[in-house]
Image 1 (cartoon, rainbow, N blue to C red):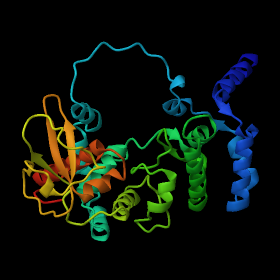
Image 2 (tube, helix red, strand yellow):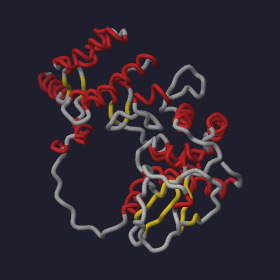
Image 3 (spheres, rainbow, N blue to C red):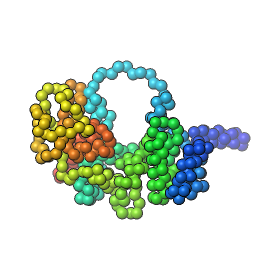
Image 4 (cartoon, rainbow, N blue to C red):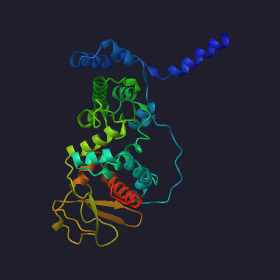
Length: 337
């Protein structure tokens, strides 16, 4: 009996070893007070929440390099282009067939999103595929504990995460969700579309009209991603990107990336490799490969995708995955998505 008792004490100490009482932190007490006064939260419930927080060291280490474990340097690897490396990490071979099946399974919802917001199904699917592997990897970090750790443990983004923690608590209060039951990314992003809580409030929609907005569910995730792109200016029936030709194997004549745009007339010696019925200014997108640079025109819709993630490579990965999903869907089912 004594052995069982000691074993229980040992197990309890292991479980609670990383638990932390954040109500001892003056900034947390003020944070709670503000939520009670301004947003009508129950003080006792908030105090109980913050009294038992599971400290998220791994999430904090992303923003505090000194917390990362030391690793032995790898042997020097063969140099490859940055785009080759990026696509190897982001666009796994399984992404395309899984995207085709996700599109087939949710085709009706995707078409409703297209009618309402003008975003083609393949682009919604590609975004969800890259963000959460079609909902299969939507995150394993407890969002409340993670955001609390990032909001109140010293790091360069304390203010941002404090704002996201407030948005998260407001969202869970409105939706009637226990904050302790929500899982997400190491930064607190939620669901198939990986929305941060502040974006959840603005862009997430109850697309299946069941009275609940759940980014963990495909219907709401699909509608919310389409709504996000539409609100950022997506233009229906406008291409996203077209590969162009130029002289040479490396391009350095103009600044490239989504921050810069040019009239097509000013880009002498650059020609699209397929018809492009687009009169707006274009972004020059350079994909640095091992032996040469690929160069692309990015349209206004390309820039819209970068509002989801501020990276030209990210937007190009979404575009290429979307086009591959569309092509394979057509091959498999004999019709457009």
